[in-house]
Length: 474
Image 1 (cartoon, rainbow, N blue to C red):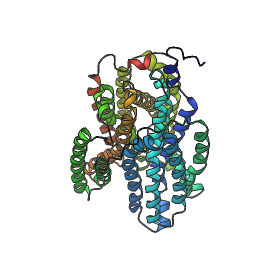
Image 2 (tube, rainbow, N blue to C red):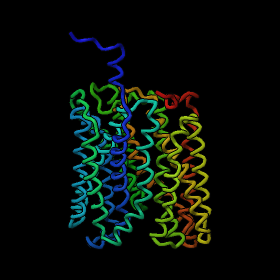
Image 3 (cartoon, helix red, strand yellow):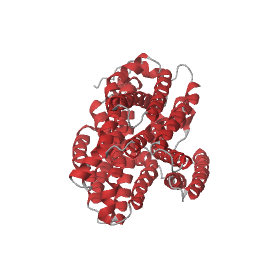
């Protein structure tokens, strides 16, 4: 005779369990994808020489990657439900690694762009699905710790990429900018095979083709618009594409509200913390991603530093990111998250203004100190936003919330760089030929500081107890 389970045993067995090895594996995938998204910029001149093209023409390889990442993200949740998250994650790691090899072996720009598109498609599935695996296996009380593991790659990779890319290109050749992914991908595959759980596939509902086409059309239009807005001769088509993207986005939203099996379930937007951190928080993320773009240019073009010197100075942002990491989890358990976000954002904006005030004669020690403090506020704010985003989302809505967060996060990267580049060009144009080489970059830093502060008002309207579940202990 079989004995019945004790009351609550089934629920306890089914409860999500925090897994540090799984979080580390997914964090490594985040790092590889984020590193690859930014490292090519340092090798642009070398690749252009080998392909006998103008450096500006390589923009198509960058754009192709961003378009593929953004366009394939909506498929992630559907594929994970249909085939199982572990299976799709492992396949994405393999495809990303092989595409990296194809990039390194590319004989011309067409081949490189094609390989980058495949790489972007793999990254679009690898990163969101990896985060979904972690979120589904983590209790709310452990969410702060889990998100802390997943946040550092997004903070560290853009800072490390300029220096690493420059060293690899100078010492080994531009091909190694891509080949560095091979050992990382191989180790990641072995580790993921051993530790990532194998949940059963979910409901195998049909793919929402109309919704997919509307979302992909809106995303592609917006990503391409970011690229066109960055050039004086193409800003008008870029502005038109922004309008097209907006119209397609509205049409997609209306479709999702009446579709039987929508590609994206918009129900998570009813959760106040998710809505604020996704919409207003995207502005903060855009600002954060604009800094690694503008600071090296300020130091090189504005102050005449070498690429290696600029890369080493930018590493102080990484020191601040890493140094504060052991304190972020206790900080968020001790204090409410909304005040933490406010303090981090105001502090970050202050460091941007301070960076805009330094000059060629400023002591490097002072510059390093400003960047280190900026890294501290950057890390705390980024972790707080990412943690609060999923704090109050019901378990049944984690998958659609993750898909929405992945799309807005990817677009924030492009938006941050595009807005920063636009601010630099406008400031240089207004300054004229007599302006300082550093003026445009300094103005861009002030613009980023203002945008950071503009991300705050909506968050201040959150109820006092927002995200309180993160401070509870199991």
